[in-house]
Image (tube, rainbow, N blue to C red):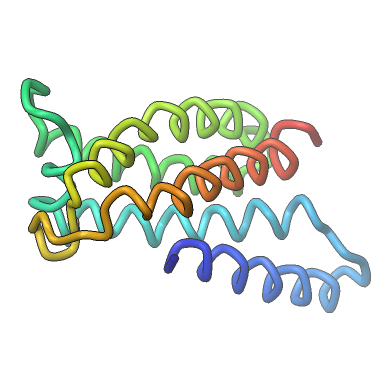
Length: 150
């Protein structure tokens, strides 16, 4: 829920700021700014809640801690790439692939009731997927229309 709040709030702030600065609504750029800020926000969780993030991956996946750090770094790189005009399109494609690639970890975490912030198995469970899967789809559509299709 927090990433969605960050995304939407930042989008409207960026949209209004860009309108004030440039005299017009720059929907796609505001969308990229908002997604970048959201990615920076979510990346911070990879470093603050590493243990819980490791729990989101099924047994048998090696180097979990390293993968948590790498995915956090990828989110930071994705956020930066969205803000660079020459890289936004390619970054958007990569982020769509990334969002699809990490969805199984979110599904596994819900099935195991992982609370990544506390590092326990007392999370929301399967009902969370009714929110998370549409949210992931929103992220994909958001990136497509703000970075890939423009």
